[in-house]
Image (cartoon, rainbow, N blue to C red; front, side, top):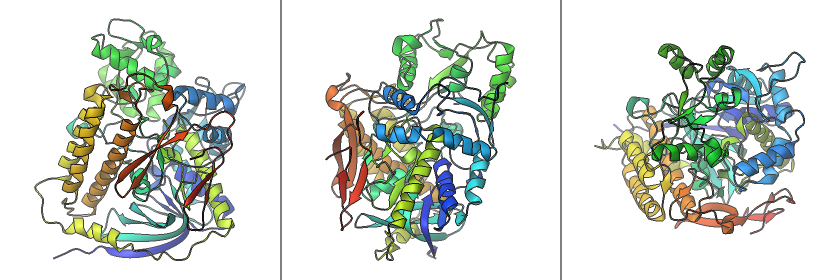
Amino acid sequence: MSKNITVEELNTDVLIIGGGTAGCYGAYILGQDGRYKVLIAEKANIKRSGCLAAGVNAINAYITKGRVPQDYVDYCKNDAKGIVREDLLLSMSEGLNEATKNLEDNGLVILKDENGEYVTRGNRNIKINGENIKPILAKMANDSKNVSVINHVNITDLLVKDNRVYGAVGFDVNEEKAYVINAKSVLMATGGASGLYKPNNPGFSRHKMWYPPFNTGAGYAMGINVGAEMTTLEMRFIALRCKDTIAPTGTIAQGVKAKQMNGVGEIYETKYGVATCERVYGTTVENTQGRGPCYLKTDVISKEQEEDLYKAYLNMAPSQTLKWIEGGQGPAEQNVEIEGTEPYIVGGHTASGFWIDDDRATTVKGLYAAGDVAGGAPQKYVTGALVEGKIAAEGILKLLDEGNSLSDFDGAFEPIINNYNKHLNNSDSNISIEQVEEAMQKIMDEYAGGISKHYQFNDTGLVIARKLILGLFEVFEKLKATDVDELLQIYELRDRLIVCLSLIEHLHARKETRWHSFAENMTHQEEDDNYKLYINSIKEADGIKIIKRPLVVDDYKPLKFTFNEDNSINYAGGVVL
């Protein structure tokens, strides 16, 4: 007996896809205005979803005393070797402290010294007790006027016609029910992409990773599928983390000023540089040249500092504290071994994501992006994602106030529903979802610069990767879902495959090595001034088209997208075609 998923239509003024950091704050800002109906569609439960689900122990993007927003722009630009959107970074940096204060006013505990000043952790960070940061954000969104939330709905496809967004389609992850959501504007806030590459830990522990395993690049994939322009996907992110637990190392490096040390006792970080990518690269080289394992040197810290580390990790990565306690040796007695993770695509740490203007509008009219899916502005962290959610919300308000409302969508959403039903009714296959996922990760690991290849790739391998990933799409079409949970897994796999293809094209297009490890191109091993530009892409009928765009530099004007009557895009402001 065939299955036919039931369909319900919903109507809203603004649809926010993803109830994480940027999505919650965008809804909160829209709710302060209160004139427009806002719906957040969240794959999990908004109270504990997204990157902040387990908490965080610091605000890593903050303008500390004596600093100005331009200082943060300069830091980000230097760390990314110049490939950033300075206009986006400046508008983001100008809002960091206001967003922080707003969180504090809503219940976030920020540590203060005896003078009532925030306790800093380095030049751009302040310490918090942030285990409950996500419930605070969820409450801010939920309590806002005219904002509603629909949990456990996985959005899979945008409704776009003639380069204008009209809403989206998704399905309930607990019951056989689909939603067609009609909206006048859409904010994409879904997070980045994990699980593209073979991870550190195999088998049962494969999802013990740095970035949330449920962030599968859905926002990127939906945008790519409807022809939105993407940028800088080739600036992958590889996190330097505590071995096995994959807990953050910044808490140790910045909190107690621990240096990176190799297995023969040498401090090596100054040899390679201290940019984010260089910290990973140095560790990789030390290991491959036989001087590993590598550590953060903590055996000189005090017992008081050790106690602070125990507490700090309980706010966001309790497995690290448990490892120390269960092992009977804390960081004051034993140096902390470190390793690089597999690569991720995440616009909160690098410049990967949607190509957007200063209002965070994408190249699809009515579609906005904020947080990890928004490109051009790395090192957002929590507060940067909040600011982008606010800027996008304000851009949406301008769009709606200008009278850019829509007539009903007159395209067809039935093919999307039919695809759900197809997977639910496919005949049994001898290939499982997990096998296809592992095949994808093996291909990316071996031919597109994964852990086993020390993050290195070359032109020949990328051509092979493209061919093999394309071949997996044929297998993917035959996958069967016995229930909606498996349907969710199938669509998460689809999203990853789509992102993999675009990533391969981006890696191939930047014929240089600008970021060691992040994009270690062995065919083009040197930095090349000809590539002081953005590598952008658009999916077309015959494949992915690469576009090279000039940098937005110091004397920039904010980039503003304008659209023709047929909704095709014009470029005005700081970037020209």
